[in-house]
Image: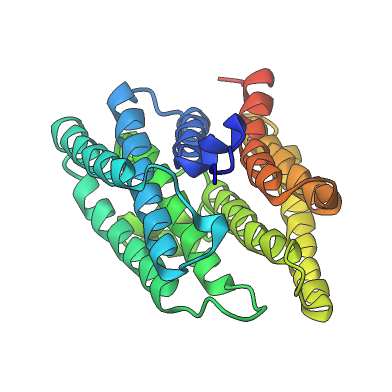
Length: 295
């Protein structure tokens, strides 16, 4: 029996290339928003390769944990294992040769977040109708942390553009202080919601989906997306100098597109929904580049 041919546009997700594209684009947005004057191409290459390596490893891990699930079937599994190792080694080499020495303490914190995410992925139950919100929360924070630290370590004096909790800057270590910035919080929330939305949409495409639980999960997705979009709009309007306004318009765009996709996902198959979710997270880059920034 011939294997079912997969559409070409699905390979972006199957090969794990979606996460590196999103990471590199948002790194550019953070670097421009935070006025990082010197930001070498090696930073983008190291981040993209590191995210790709971790993305493939997690897909392989999930595939081994949930056997028989066609949604987690990965083509060229053996080749991807080799690619994952090569990408990880290359990212490490680029980091050692090109990043400032201060990056290593940040990477240690990032490794702790990543270990927590892997542990939740490995030990959390894969049965039932409950969305693993804890896993999606730590996953969104880990993804956002890895991206933002790659911009933050190149800031002169490691200064934040604006923090929500100014008093905490005196008591928290520098390795996590940038997590209090409005930009980080908004982006981390966007990542969390996109991740939990993917699981919700996967469950809704299954025949045995629980209608009552699904309704609660719909509210748990729609309400935060609405609040995130509203907060991004307020932050954008408050910025009289328009230095961060394009960034927040990007956050607003991502939240709005996820909301639209949530309402219209019944028109698409789940494979198409996964690709459209990636587009929702890449579209803010177009908005950002099309908006004039005041320097």
